[in-house]
Length: 461
Image (tube, rainbow, N blue to C red; front, side, top):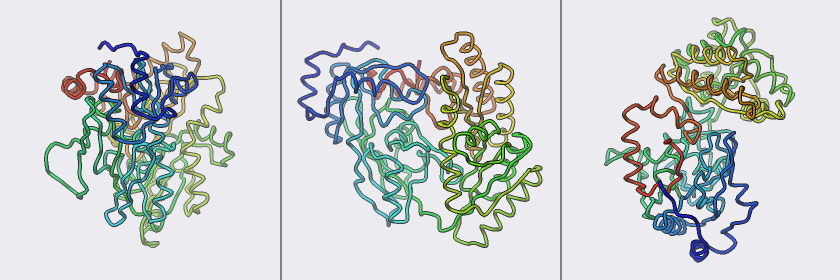
């Protein structure tokens, strides 16, 4: 795809579409929007624009399409695969100014929001109504970013990911046309499911500006528990046994001993340094909750757990989840001067134990420092590889290990990316994972974005 160079005439036209304080070619703004939380190199746009309405987004995109200028949507840059990087320069649309909660319809368990609304901030407001948006990526990501990557998190095992919790969208297509796929009904069998097509497309098919999200009631009661095991294999087998028992945990997280040690060092968490499961159960009955925890403890004992601590209070429980969410941050802080790659495989639950063992064995084979944790309840493994990415020899080992681990996950019927998206880093696995279906994906992209202006360089090599 050939793009036109950005000119002074382009800048003058765009300044006529948005207020002067919401468009910038300043070096500091271009720098901020040149990198995310991933290890991928920086890419600099020509201009950053902060729209405030769908109409402004539509006008900018329509002009960019006519002039063949790339457009890259931007949330807050917390993505981990280079998803929002402007690889071919052009325009970055930063949704920081589109952060309004448009309507809370508690009786329908819906909230209407602009794409720049931040997940954690939104849930604080929703809590006053006894409601929350369940997908939890950990970081205070924007809703637009979560929709783009189909983010999920620790509560996916009970509530599903972002894709399962979006009812309706407002989307700007590549030619500037605005569509509104979806509806407010609880179910529909009308037409193609364009909502699910857009969710997870990383802004390559259209730019989401507004969304109706499905909400859940904040659980009346919860019970958290922490179990430790002699080996990761015993912990992962416990995951399978708990899910197979029909207990239905609200969260079920795995941390290997290396990750636990880092959390203890960085946060003085006082965790037992062993393979660990964090569990949480929710419900309306204290009796039923106690029974769920008792059964979970029995399953842990059957798998030779070292310890099982239940009845964790609200403050301690919040501290546990805060430390889990910050695991990647703690790992980075604990390894100053090193670079990091996060593998994000997901496999069928029956193969999770094997997948974790394979990943750990592989990095040991290559002599690589790694940390394993993840959303065990839905088969999602995060493996953080730490090292000096300026060292060519190390990078060769890193890439070989990455290829072996991801290929193994795909061979098991799994995926290269459970929740971080394809972005730049996972493009090379698309053909292996999707086979002939990849050709149809490319055809859809060409049909919806014939000039290739929407977030180019992502998804497909």
